[in-house]
Image 1 (cartoon, rainbow, N blue to C red):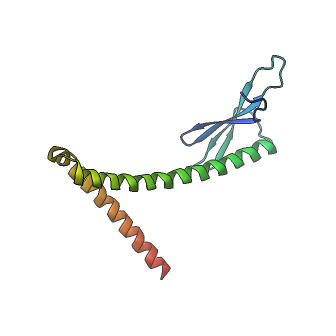
Image 2 (tube, rainbow, N blue to C red):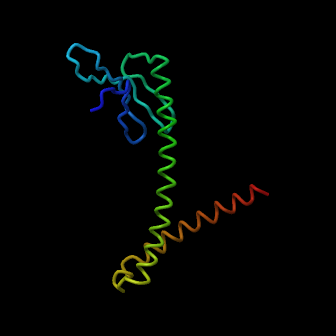
Image 3 (cartoon, rainbow, N blue to C red):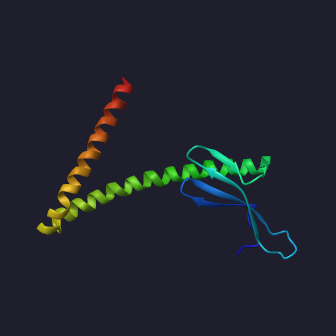
Length: 134
C-alpha cells in the first residue's frame, strides 16, 4: 500500500456510493474508515450518516467525486454502445460465415425483434432531431 492514503474513500454502489473519511492518525496507526454519508448520483442527494453534519470540505470532495463519477459512467455508456455496434458486425459475420441452420433457427426471431425495436427507436429519435433542427 502506498505511503499516502486519500482523506476520503468512496465505496461504489449501483446508484452512487457510501462515503468514508479515512483516518490513519490514531494511536494504533491503523486505517480507520468512518462512514460519513450516502450519495445518490441519480438524484444528486447526499445524506449524512446518522447525526453527522458534513463540513464544507466533505461536501466539496463529494460533489467533485459525483461529477467525476457521472462523467465516467457517461463514457462507459457510449463505449458500451460502440462495443454493441462491433458485436452486431461480428454477429452478422457469424450468421453469414459460421452459423449452422439450427443455430440460426434458435436466434433469428430474437435478433429480428431486437433489431426491429432498436431501428424503430433510432428512426423516431432521428426524425425528432431533424424536426427540431428545422
